[in-house]
Length: 205
Image (cartoon, rainbow, N blue to C red; front, side, top):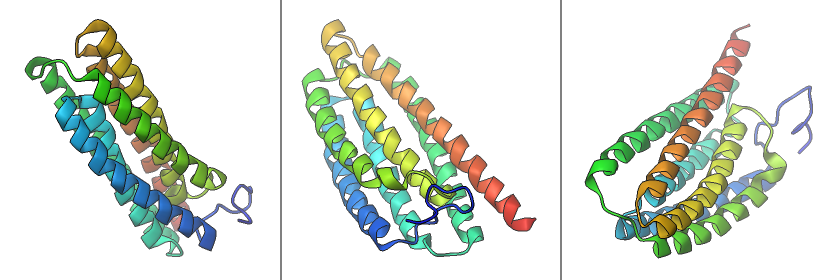
């Protein structure tokens, strides 16, 4: 892991240990996407479905990150740019569907939200723990860390939303949390796109 956190060179993911950890995180995210999307649909929870979409996006993101490890800076920065754009689109989709559900959907099931949110939090804390030592690096590595961090924050938010739904007997806490998660997607997208474009400009100089 030499150079991972150094100032002279950014860690590019070329490490057997990092790749093994990434495979484990891909499996965790793919499994939780299926669990959380199913539960979100059953519970009519927009926050759960937004978080499930984040799991799916992360599994794809990690797969792309794994595929371009060791490739040229141009390939890695382009892959990071694509992931940033996908996060941007994801955030816009969550905003749009949340606005729709304000008018079209009833109160979600708080108990299911809380149970699945807690299960997802455990899964994401495991992912964060696996990737913690590799949180700094180029845009490709950095995008992996930001997605993992978003997941953990999102699961805590879903649990808070479940408490809010239970306490108020309305769907507004669920919708508010979904909107906050969409904003987090957009913020991460801006960071990833900005770093990938900077790396591409650096390559040309």
